[in-house]
Amino acid sequence: MPTPPMADDARPTGGDLPNAGTQGEHRLLPSLTVLVLIVLPALLPEHLRSWAHWVLGGAEVTLLVVIVIADPGRIDRRGALVRSLSIALIALLLAAAAVATVALVVDLVAGTSKFDSAEPLLATGALVWLDANLTFSLLYWELDGGGAARRLHRQRSHPDLAFVQHVNPDLAAPGWRPTFVDYLYLGLTNALAFSPTDVMPMAHWAKLAMATQSIVSLVILSLAIANAVNLLS
Image 1 (tube, rainbow, N blue to C red):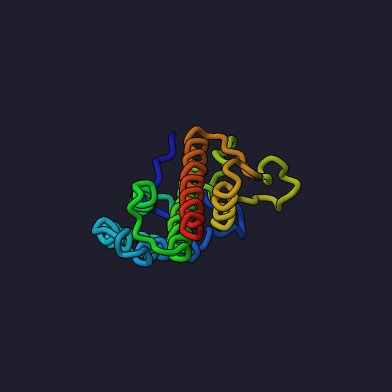
Image 2 (image 1 turned 90 degrees about the vertical axis):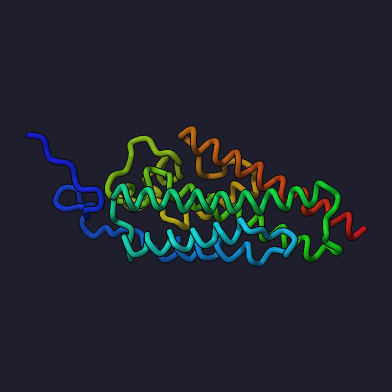
């Protein structure tokens, strides 16, 4: 007789539990990262800020609060509601990063930039660059293997993102799985190297996301540095 499906927001029991002693990843660091991303647009120069930042920021705060209330503490709840809210939050963060990136690029390419010295330009470029790459780190963390809760309960036989520990299990403890710090490192190295380093994208979405991040990082860095050098000369 087939086993009835588990309710969307029910916590796993019995055979669906992870290995004994295994706990879900704590939500604190990802939540702090989201809060940083909500604050970053407010630090941009006034001429690069728009109403979209405030609207998106308000919606992001609301979604973050609802997600934390629905699944507080450790991330171990596999439910359609929490999953949908998490993906919606990432989508809003991506939209906010896109708004900031486009605003900076247009400002620098149009030749009407209001930056009168290199220091504020480089600081602004760093803020936009950080915003984009933290957002991509959250994207990888949320989508890889179906999210943190699904990675806790079941590792896929073919990962979306192949970490070194996946390729060579002898380098990690039994039952190892990536946590948010691993995805932060992935986002940083991909943004600086403009290519995969020690984490290989296997799924199509991962390849497209990493390629997009590399292009965005290259555009921000090259334009900010080139314009700063022009202001210094």
